[in-house]
Structure formats: structure tokens, C-alpha cells
Amino acid sequence: MKNTILILTVLFTCASATFAQGYQKDSKVVNAGIGFGLAGIYGDAGMPPISVGLQYGIDEKISVGGLVGFSTSSYSAFDWKWSYTYIIIGARGEYHFLEPSNKLDAYAGLTLGYDIVSVSTPSDYFGGYATGDSYLVYGVHAGARYAITDKVGVFGELGYGMGYLTVGATFKL
Image (cartoon, rainbow, N blue to C red; front, side):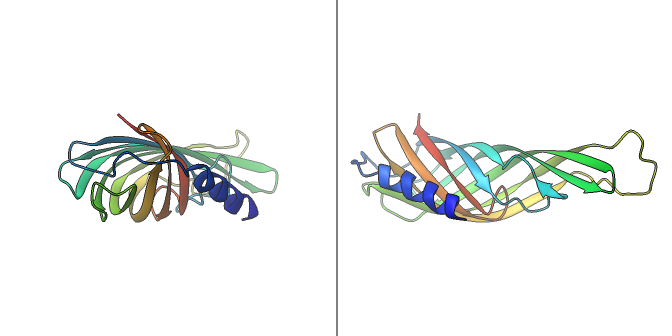
């Protein structure tokens, strides 16, 4: 938890420069982030969820886009170990609260997608342990973007879907 607070503090402290414009119609924004906590994993988290998302402004207040994410986990019992890989592909919609002239983009949205789960089962295991399947991903999120320059900034999101907390870099195209 201390590392999470430190990362957030550094990201938002570094974002103290001016911001050219907030979110607006026809904006194209790419977010690349790392998440903390992933719902629906089996066993212990391995690699935290990393994601790349694209949002396109269809209106002054509404954007749509997609998200691709990757994560791993593992589960151990006795002398056996299962390794899981998660590839999340989803669609997102967001509502932007602030006026386009503001220097900050605050938003909330919905995610709907699919989590493709693959598992590596121990070769000498012949028991009845269920390895899990792929599943539907849905969630809500709230976040903010703040630009360091006209094209590069930072973002943070709280929600359910890709990660409980996601932080990273944002790029205007």
C-alpha cells in the first residue's frame, strides 16, 4: 500500500505544468497503465494488470473506446503449481464532467469485455481441480487525466474491471 501511495504522489506531483485543453469532441487519447488488484483471478497475483486503452470523443461530454490488458497469477497446492494468464479485451464508454477549457479531465465510465484465461496445469497432476475458464468482464470506473505537456500526461482510475486502482501515462493523438 505504501508503494501505491508513493507512485500516486510522484505521478500527480510531476503533473504540475499547464494543460492546453481538457477533453473535447474528436479527442483521441491513449492511456497506458499498471493496475493494482484484479478481480476474478485464481490464486496469488503474479504480474499486475497492465493495460492500453484508446478513447475517442464522440461528443463534448461522451467518449467511447477500447481496452486491452494482460496479467498473470499462480495457485499452489502441495507440490503442484498452476499458472494463469489473463488477456482482457473490452469496450469502454465515459462521461466527462468538466468543460473542455478546464486543465483537468475528470470522468466516469463503464467497461464491458471478455477475459481470456489460459492455465498451465502441472504435468504429474491427475486430480479433479477445476482450472477455471474465460469469463465476461464488466465494471465501472472513475478517473482523472492531467497533462504535463500538450500531448503527454498522467492518469489515475478507481474502479472494477481491469484493476481496482490503475495509474499511468496518457497521450493525446
